[in-house]
Length: 451
Image (cartoon, rainbow, N blue to C red; front, side, top):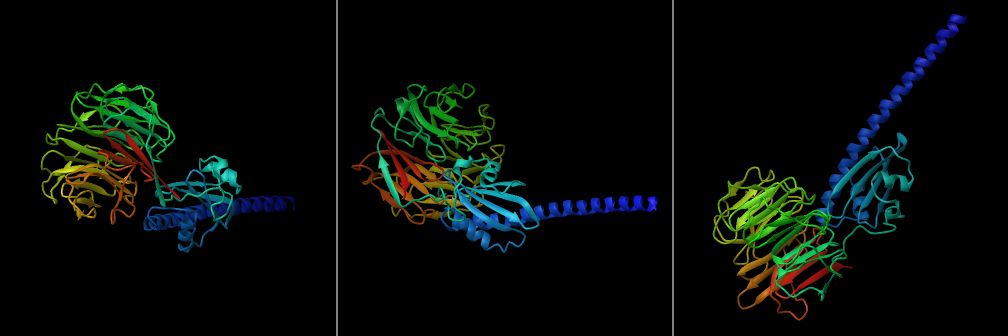
């Protein structure tokens, strides 16, 4: 009898272990299915965001999730944060103590965190890397904040404490909070409040001709004519001369979103760096007066000669290899741009036409939406998703003019800033499209979109 009882106990223990093992693997399978299903939701959210002019709010996320026929879980909260992000929290009925957290930002980015965490809002938020105080309190309505960007009104301000000068060097962080402005043979300035107040940096007075900054505004690359490049990695507090690059006449510089990839176009050569400072001369490209651009991740680059007729050159591997794009033929084109996600390329040429490519420059479609010929494009900027555009042009008989588009360039609206009649020598914008910067012979103007 004792032996029988012992065997029954052993059998019971083995059975319990087997049941627990089955439960573990079933739980893991359910979590994997949950992640797969949420990826489907994510793709719908991204598509919906594109159709919604890049605006991504809690309602957009919820609508996309509802249309996904998500059968393996329940979306129980869609929250917005004051930092402009939307949290999608989901529960699987088969795993009652789990949440899967997805983060979305208004420009179409996606950050995924699959974590078994308590259902409390603060813990779920912490798992996503956001301060708990930023979490909205409403389920599906946004609660404490809205992630949608508003483009209903455009308000301009003209800083008065900047030295008068030719402001060709302008740059802004992705959200437009940090800004930099430099003029020819004058000081360089920085702002941390969207252009309301400005302070002189330690860069000194040089023939500043071009500026660019990373998404967070910490890495700044500047070019001075008849001089070299200067790099700051601490938001303009200190600067290092890039002595490995020869002194030259410069046209344009760009910094990738993470600040690791740099590109600069001179009067003869394109220079690139993929580690924040060790430079490579792109000797496979012909000698030309280069304008340049690159994607947020630094992989997609575009270069074009602004002084004489030539081809557009494209690299999709951070400058390792380049290819001439011949489908548009040879022409003088003054500005190039790449959407932050690298999916769209733009070139602006005289005659008022700009071209767009969605296949790495192999094919291009032209647009004359401005409605007139331009003698030159002074500045050309696009938002991360390409839906917001800002340009400065010079037109014989009409002078220097500023234009904006909120529908990927389908329609353009001229913007008259102040009394008008200013010589707008450059224009740029933050990657989210909310902050515009225009430089003239005498100063700068800052445009801010809002409700």
